[in-house]
Length: 239
Image (cartoon, rainbow, N blue to C red):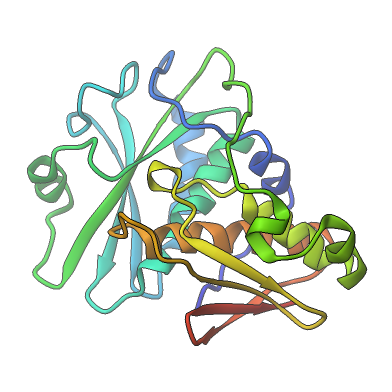
């Protein structure tokens, strides 16, 4: 599970990605075709990513009518939805596009009709995509490294390059109302993304999946390929 060919240019995208709600235009055909390739690669293990152009987004999103829908089969871990969806976000960011995760900024009846949602399927989030004149300045408000994993950057660096890159990339993952519903454990053998209780937990598992994708991309930047295993309270990554 969580098997997906990662791209090295997603690492830089992690440090550029910001949520965008006002777009200059919808993606062009060439960009849509490229995003469609990623959607097909990420559509398995109980998750399907589909691109749509037209009605479905609420008024808070302006300037684009293009969005991706994440469809999940019943029983699919929500972490997998976040993992695959964030891959699309980072691919779009690497292309210079803007994106925005939406848990409520869409019309469910329109989305369900477009998808032809089946009884054993659910849609929890969609992702708005579009052209921007320039990506917003990257100023993420995130807990510091020691608060996230209990280690200083120096102590983290003593574990190894891949652990440090994985933790620092995971720390920057977006989450619903920026709750950052995870704690990260790092040692000489693994980096784990674990549950952290938050007030509003509806999207917390999906957010942890986003965090896991960031961690895997960080490990790849250091030359390691990640593999995840379910553990008590979350998932452990070895690389």
